[in-house]
Length: 129
Image (cartoon, rainbow, N blue to C red; front, side, top):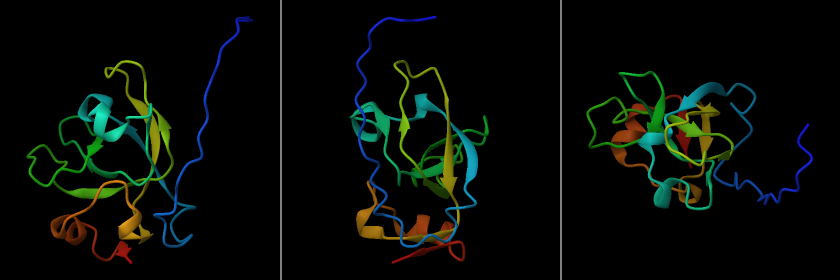
């Protein structure tokens, strides 16, 4: 039993990028490849922000940040990180997460913008408002 004193900070998850409740009850369970993310860009506050666009890394089956210029599978937008997830202290530890892969998204509220190619990848599954 660990009875040591610890301090933890909690922040509210900003899901203002969600355009409706549609799809939020059927998110997909995924694994984030922490090493694929950049700490200063994707988790500067110690957690992955909800709404980060994600792509599936072909070699591992894990997910990383959507990158239209990549050639590892993440150049295809798969969905958006549904809830904020604590980032591990080292980038060799992968974390479980939930991904919204169909529904409505408020484009102007996303933490990272999605280009036209990304929007085409999810056409018919995700509506950008």
